[in-house]
Image (cartoon, rainbow over all chains, first blue to last red; front, top):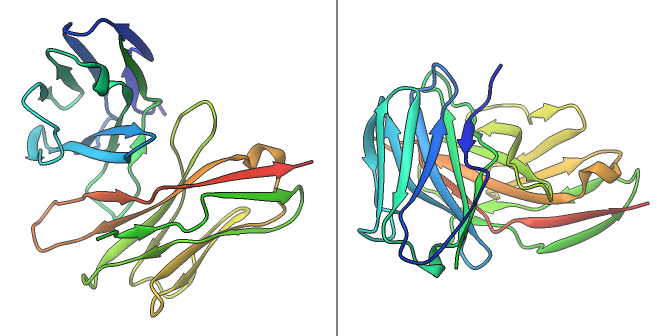
Length: 114
Length: 118
């Protein structure tokens, strides 16, 4: 079975540029999550969706961050304009609402803002 | 307040020994789930094991078992017969099941870096 697919795996860009991270959840999963991982703050939940609808975006750091889920098989996390402090690993995860089962993570996008 | 506490930033264990990674949690919800994830140096997050708050028995998955002590609010991960490939960061996480239907927020601890020595 295909897992959560994230792209790109690595992104290096200059400060001020727009960055778009992409995620394809596991087919049939109704929940999609975006996390950020840094050494200082560990794993933080940024936002999550249920049936393509954003449920909780309280973890989104500021207005420069936005996330969309136009359909059940695709989501984007956008940073505009990017800043060096946005450098981190960004994970997408998905889960089913049928059980108390786990969230399955993608391999992450390692983002470096110069 | 910290919801998930992992008190061991790093652990070193000899190959083939058993290892216990500590995790304590804080919640007032009667219904919750506890998870352990492994993050090897390659960076991906791998789900290992799950324990529900109402489960009567400790969860087991192969060499992994979860020592769930509800009264003490602890959910320690036990790895039996450790292998070199077990070297990784290990994260404990909790999902509370609040009254709001569908809310599935997962809160992670800071992790324990496990190193298995040959």
